[in-house]
Length: 303
Image (cartoon, rainbow, N blue to C red; front, side, top):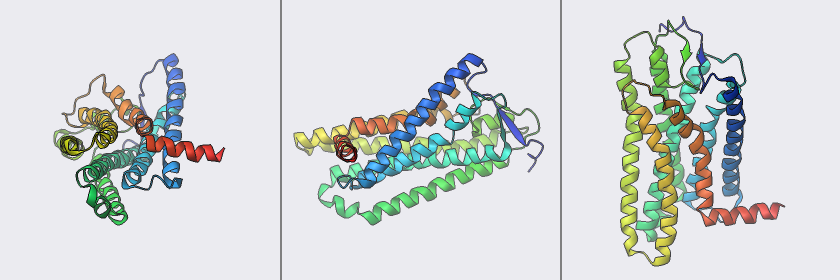
């Protein structure tokens, strides 16, 4: 590898304006703490509550865990750098950030697919639901999702490690990711970008299509449900679809195009790395009466 001439990078961040950086520090510190609090609240509630023992909430637990970790891979660095005069990140830290952000981001994608599978079985095959989605099957599916996420992020890390850096060190972003790193590589990155598109881009796009098709099948099957069943299923599926759109549209925009950058890239990245992990627990909590009731009972009893 020819990348040893660069031992550290400089993260440009969202802006170089001193006043705006102070605002970024305050805003994103609050957003990050809210993300940790909201996702931790859901995880603890699901773990303790006896009424949230179905597979859907088992997957929601892992989604909240992935969200909290995904946000942690980027938000703390952005917050610290906004009030720091030295915005450097070592080569090893940068590679670690590439690996962890893709690990937890990919895990979120796979968990969303598992949640759509769970809803499909629950709505389309209600009599066989507990037989098909038993505890052993759900645990195996989550383990497979973790293995798949590790493979994906491992490939991203290997691609990043192969990039030679011998010139500029300024990353025009607020965290280390493949697209900004490609701009700094002192080699032709056309083939490398194709590999990234086939890896990250394909996972985002194919997963999005699979999820859309699965929810179309689910919505079509609701015609055979009772009015109460349709109402409950629509409430659950609407929140799932909203989460999917909020997460996948920015990811597809970022990872399924040639190695070009746009002014909106950093804002889009903020949305799917920091915004979505905060919105997910809010959407699932506000639109889910079972979770809200479990929280009231659990935390009301604690007081």
